[in-house]
Image (tube, rainbow, N blue to C red; front, top):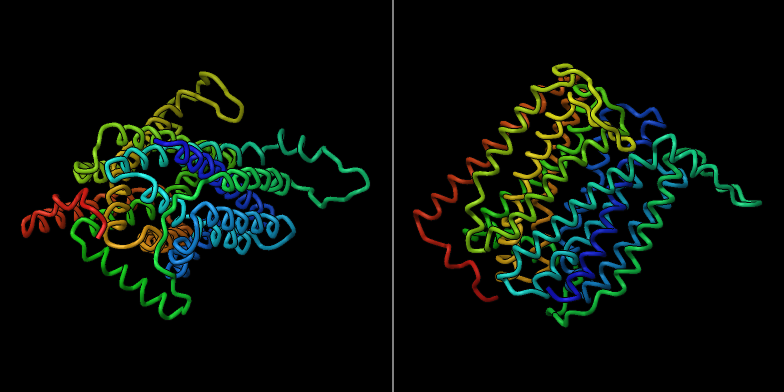
Length: 439
């Protein structure tokens, strides 16, 4: 990998770190406002709404100028979302602004990989990007939990500006202020991303023409025998992953008797597994063998079902050691192990699928447009799964039943995807398309 790739990785790390820390701070703000429990998963729903509503436009925007410039502009939009949240706007609305920036950031972030690297390096690049992104999820979630904890928040709130009343009086507000500084770091790195030299035809500006163009890209990717399989898998994965974030926090509260700060750290445990699986896939799975990982998706759903059956009362609460907010006790070891296993399986099967989808999108259309189509599908899945999860919480369904149903749905859908791929191959062997040059 060349130097530009590492700059892109650094920019992605800090921007994603801030996104995930901000989610925990936003949840703390909702708790501070005594918001109902069903409103918490709606944070993610409002965040991803822009991915769906603006899908026809963000791809064209990403292809209209150098990707580093696009990443700087969109990171600035995230910063504005923080400011709005800090000064009294409802967390749902504020996090939606951050989601607007993220929706436009994504086509540039992934699109630049296909401009910078040859197809045979895409799995490795995605593995490292995914591993780094997951590392930022781990650290961001932990950072959010630490920043809202009593010890750290009281220290932050203890700093006074002479003669100035900042209006920052709660742990959530002090956390948001720190997170804003991380977005500033990401913006400074964005400015260092070099121009790859890739240029596309002049982008349309008429909204109806853009929607028509997006619809054509959408059908092109779903009609492609390899594109439809990779798109189906990544669509399922990101919907499941977004929902699992909130499921783990709720499971930590009910089955493991943890508070929000501890649950946020526990949530990061599964991300350790995703990072491991992503890096392992980057090392072991070449692009031409990417479809061999599909059965691991079924296995992930099964392990999720097993997770629902465990609670901390099954083993004695014997403390082995404590690191900050994270207490490692005997009765939590199985929970950590299951979360790491779920994450490892997820990372191992999604990274090759991401790389294959990016490759087919780049071959069939432009980088920005293909990523916009991918984001549209993935976030439709996120919206649907989060709406169902919010409804189940509103109906007061036990979290154990929610988790089991979630795991079964994931396994069944992955099995159907495998059957579809087998049917495609029976009609026409499409594997030789992997690695072909851009049309």
